[in-house]
Image 1 (cartoon, one colour):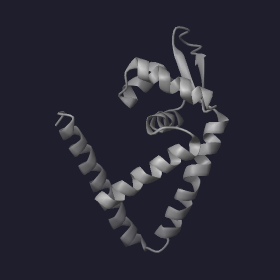
Image 2 (cartoon, one colour; image 1 turned 90 degrees about the vertical axis):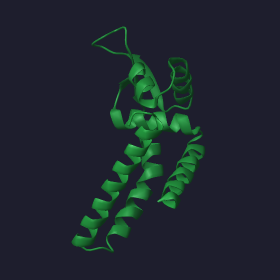
Image 3 (cartoon, one colour; image 1 turned 180 degrees about the horizontal axis):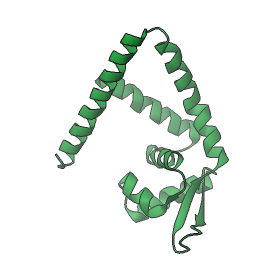
Length: 139
């Protein structure tokens, strides 16, 4: 498990460098891509950053062409951060081949084996969440 986690971290680092970002900026961009247009305050909470740090991240992502800022039409006081088409293209470029390779690897297994793999991955995810909560003092 540790080696698998390390491989994910190494990949994320390479992805960030490839996109001209740091790991925090990549994590925030991933949150925006996954969540759709997002108020800056929600990004602050989701990324567990200070408001000032979030502003700096958004500034860098905006300069890189990966996000735009705009007023929420429903609440003009709120700023929405939206991923650009360049961000979506970068997401496909970086993560598309990973998905394709993963699907190709899974074709080597039958339905029963895939069910077992899925069960294991779900259990591993729960372990990670529990251990994260433990370290944060939330358990």
